[in-house]
Length: 221
Length: 221
Image (cartoon, rainbow over all chains, first blue to last red; front, side, top):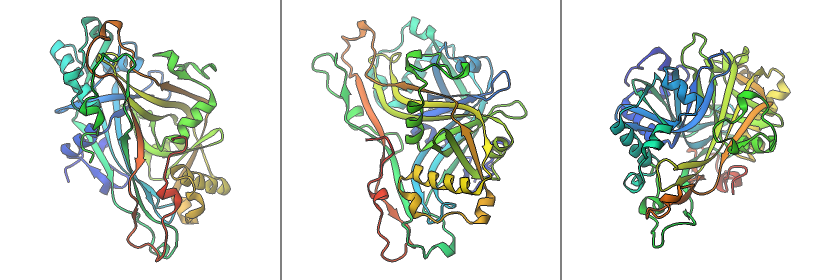
């Protein structure tokens, strides 16, 4: 196992679930549709915490949103940030409440963001975000106008201080509980698409693209 | 619409998406399997941020976990906490990148936790957690021993300072984009169970219960 990149990324609880290799971190960030972003409250109260879309490009995690967002504005001027992306893969039914759990894969990333001001990078991030949400969409979307770009804040976080935590497998019950007769095992959970709902004003003859009808998250089966 | 319970729970971005009524907040907390919990870093750095299971009972949100968890220990001694629970309901494919979005329901809750020390309340929370994860499981689980209870920290957060943010509906494209020929609309997403994986050491004749074979989140269709 690779070493933790810093003390605060080291997994203390259940260290056997810790993973610090970049490929493992990347796969979780790519499959997770959204993340949660936390920054300190400047007045010392509870942190600010928001869900948002992200995308990983190489060694960088990009966030974006309206310039009117207080949290994103704080990021753009150097607030230290914590990002968590979590995938719930299943329910672990142990015989005991104590050993019941979830199977999951999560990443926590610490850092300070850089505002993306270069126009080419802004367009690249816009395309990457479209493909993160629905792989294939980037070639099939109207890119931002100058005015839309001015309203949008793009932020880049280096993936240097990230760790993953992963639980897989069945229940770990106490030996004395194995004779109990309740069901134990794992119920897998996954994000599944429903039936596409076309916009009422679709241009005539517009077909539903494959990336919608056969939607799946990258990395999922 | 009910008023925001405090300034920091008021929705500034897209205020039309804000909802402050308790029933709306409750429904999101009940359907969300997990939440994210953020507390300030005592040394002033990036916040601590962890995913964890929660359960709502009446006007209280309960968290629990090992006493070895730094974040939960900080909560038990009065750290101000922010909790976010987020459900992603679908992908909103707008013709423009700028108007593309997700349909979602999210709750943010601020507060200070109380440690649950009463034995009867600890058992009630244990049962509620089991039923939160899989409705029906509480009657079918081995409850904690004294030693297991000693290792577990139970925390109660009042649901007084909570707000919800909800986006529903189709894409809101610019009028001049409606003639574009790419697909627009919504692809619903939901959490679906897979095929149950029984534990290898199941007691002979143990049937798979209905709450596993017909699993669904409370509130989902």
